[in-house]
Image 1 (cartoon, helix red, strand yellow):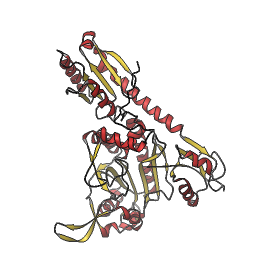
Image 2 (image 1 turned 180 degrees about the vertical axis):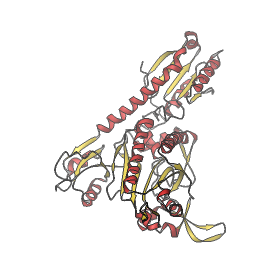
Image 3 (image 1 turned 120 degrees about the horizontal axis):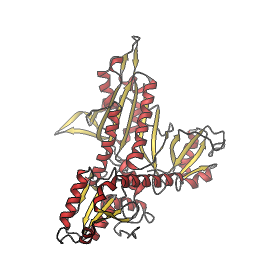
Amino acid sequence: MERQQVKNESITSRDVDFAQWYTDVCKKAELMDYSSVKGFIIYRPYGYAIWEQIQSYLDKKFKQTGHQNVYMPMVIPESLFNKEKEHVEGFAPETLIATQGGKEKLDERLIIRPTSEVLFCEHYAKIVSSYRDLPKKYNQWCSVVRWEKTTRPFLRGAEFLWQEGHTVHATESEARQETLTILDIYATLGKELMAVPFLQGRKTDKEKFAGAMETYGIEALMYDGKSLQSGTSHYFGTGFAEAFGISFQDRDNTLKPVHQTSWGVSTRLIGSLIMVHGDDNGLVLPPLVAPIQIVIVPIQMNKEGVLEHARALADELSAAGYRVHLDASDQTPGWKFAEYEMKGVPLRLEVGPRDIQNGIVVASTRHDHKKANWNRSEVVSSIPALFKEIHHEMYQKAVNHLQSHIFPVANIDELTKAVQSGYAKTMWCGQQACEDKVKELTSATARVLPFDQKPHAETCAICGKKATKVIYFAKAY
């Protein structure tokens, strides 16, 4: 049975003002709050719990692939930061700099880390000397600071949470394989945990990370047709190694620079969850990532046996390993229904006197607003298949949205139209001048060069010369 959906009037409709809808959801679902410093947000328990699920999933994957967690200092001496010129030119405008410690002016300014390449490089130069020391595959969970002028919760902040992996290898092939292995882990995270499909591919030279030889990315398509870069993996080659003196004695007794990688995802992933799956009533969360997977709402809680029955059901579900919340507050059932719908809880169970008498529990699923009566004795056994079905349906809906918003284009007019609502799949000559022209005319940017380079035309859609690459353009956050 499908329930008539009632609009939550406290949340702006997505089609009226998508940006305001996003802010409403972030605030009213209690994911975050604003602090007294612009761009620095407070991660509230519900929002942070989503990050914990992402962190737990990735941390397990990283350890399975031989990575170790470390922690580097949050400050970088300016002289060390300046050691890799290309890297500094990429980040210098975004850095926050400490000039005073206590009452004394610092002898050397300290950069609050925007990323930690130079710290890892300095450390690796000290601990790597032989091929026997390689590979070193380190990851850290931390926050970084980038002094952004325009900020939006989770999507772009002056400070955000992330993981950053930094590895060094004896050979180019091993480092390149590492770069792609991590990209695959990120893509699998989207599919298995978040029910979000990602476009994967290589970034153009213009869009690649400062100091990288190659950058690969995952891109998610939001409800409004804009793309969100959701993670990147970089092959550095030996550039950083040569700048920082990270070398090793190989088996042939020659001294060689290491080959290096770096990769990361951030709390931007929370933004992608909100904008890919959310609806006009708030969040819609896949079961595996939801902080509360099941909420139990007692009906006529003052009636004898109702609360006890609800507590017994909650205990049973918790013992089975589910994240369960029993709302025994004095709010009305209607208020509770709207509250947990707004928070995107995948499954709501209602227990009232008549339900107890009939041996049933009323189950409502958030993603499709369907309602059904379950036999009380079959509740726990019914959930694994249901959660699998919810995840599959949410993922397929997102895949359908993505696929229906990829538009092969043949010229600049078609490209201009396509990027208003999705990806323009474009044949490209490979020249940055054409890439720049697209941004100038449409404000869209190159997102990825997909791994599938099957051409759909022979000439560049921008300049008309011979095309050499397939590329996706889109407007982006």
